[in-house]
Image 1: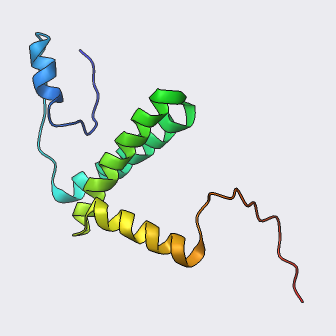
Image 2 (image 1 turned 90 degrees about the horizontal axis):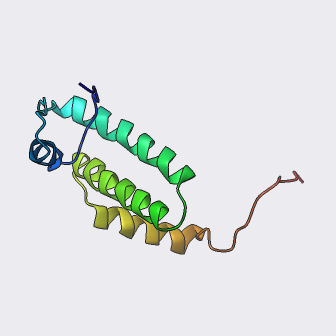
Image 3 (image 1 turned 30 degrees about the vertical axis):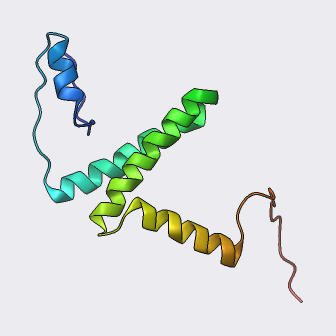
Length: 107
């Protein structure tokens, strides 16, 4: 027996069953769901930091999936998040030029 106690993708229980194992699951409350999505986002973030190449792209995709559902909790969409990202890029710039602010001198 392995204990996971974590949010998983919807098809994971069926995959476990197809391997001849028995998944023990429950449906989260809305508050638990939000907490577990946030926990999962942190887990995926940690995985992004150590992944390389195609694996990193897979982990970034996982982060986007979680952001999509966190957005839904806030009555929004991933598309709206991306739109806001683009608006902020227009107003404040992006991170493309690799600018690192060391300090600001006061007049």
